[in-house]
Amino acid sequence: MHMFWDILVLLLYFAVILTIGLSQRSKSVSVEGFTLGDRQTPWWAVVASIIAAEISAATFLGAPGEGFEKRNWTYVQLAIGTILARIFVSAVFIPVYYKHGVISIYEFLQTRFGPVTRKAASITFMITRVLAMGTRLYVSAIIVVLAFEMLSERSAAPMEKFWLFTVALVLVTLLTAVYTSIGGIRAVIWTDFIQVGVLVAAVGFAIVFLLGKIDGGWTAIVGHIQAPAFFDWGAPNGHLDFTYILTNEYTMWAAFVASTFVTMATHGIDQDTVQRMLTAKNRRQSAFATVMSGIVDVPIVSAFVFIGLLLSLYYQQNPDAAMPHEDSREVFPYFILHVMPAGLRGLVTAGILATAMGSLSTALNALSTSFARDFIFPKMSPDSGDASKMRVLHWSTLMFAVCIIGVGVTTAWYVTWHPETRIIPLVLGILGYTFGSILGIFLVAMFTKSRGNDLGNVLAMTGGFIAVLFFSVKEVQAVFGIAKPFIIAFPWRITLGTLTTVAFALCFTTTENRQAAIRDFKEVN
Image (cartoon, rainbow, N blue to C red; front, side, top):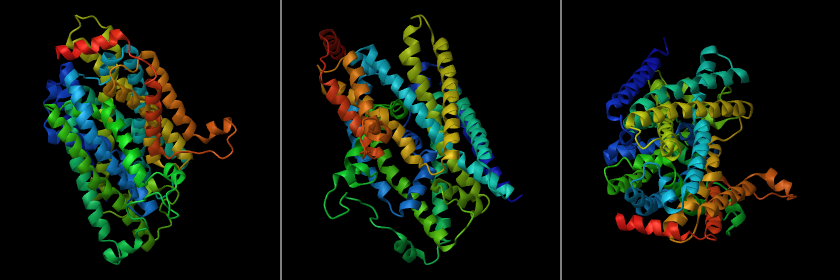
């Protein structure tokens, strides 16, 4: 009976989400309605949806893990670059997308370069997003394993953990796929709005509850913070150390430069996030929502890190031999299950599920949109109506749900046997291998008129990927006989990939026919 209120809260949460998601079915019977909500979403709902995309379960558990390990807010300084990048995206990317009337943003690349570039970028996005989403999804299942251990009063064996992870992520994915495939982007947006409310409530109550458990109040908390509290300028020995800067994740250089490139990629050329922005009524509201989401994101992420810092102090004051010591990701869910009271425990658990389902729903919608628009619709008969195209979108959504489940299960298997793996570098690191290549091509497309072509762009994207792979994997450097490998930190991967791709792409000239087509498009519009 001690979990009755938790189960009741969770059932109520699932009932509300499903009801809202399925209620959007009648408004999502056309391609425009399913993918962009007929561009009728108010800006404040777009803000909530963008935040839901960013605050995944990896952040819900990974950010407290960073606060627990580092006992400071150096992770949050990356927000500086995210705000700068959103301003850039709002001024440069969004106007272009609205002007060209794209649904899949990779359609713009076909207008600028040709069909090969469009398909190469779209395929790269789909593969990367499935891999990243699968690893994120695994994180939400951590609390299921800890709940099992609490109820059974014993530690779960590795194979038990794996099967618990698998069952949990399959159920969450299928449930999300149902309302996403039926309700389209409207279901995504409005369920995101509810999920962000649940998330904020969960974080707020968790902080208040933790503060009440700390002996010594603010004096103890301030004394527990480890320097540097907020900003690391990359000068550990009193002078700038660029090797230190490029190999450490959270420095001010990473905040101003690397984080800016990361966010330009995630909010400028990632169909997952951009599709939410394009649901706004016009480009001004879309731009405003994009910048506002970055401002709102800072206190939310700071709160997550603060939870980790408080947990570090709490368990210093109240040692618990049973607490997970190998994996900082598990500390917050362990605290939720073993210390929080009934009801509040259910609310915070719902917050974890909300972050997982929020990021998953839009990923499914974006993946199905890109797949259908970039590969299937162009091959369909011109007479094909919305009914035929909607069937493609529905089945594509379910297909990608299965793919994400496959990646999630694989991740669960790996992390079960490698519990020391840090989840935020894992998730963001996957994006880092390929998103720099896509961003580089978009930058060439938007800032030049005569550089880049289909063949050159594919070579440039490949070069960007190889450069990131070489400086990110020590085993690759070892193949070339490098005894002391130089490995860049994960926030710098997209910067390296972008600059390498741009350098290669600028070496190729846009064909005269393509330049003429671009001029004609501008004259018509």
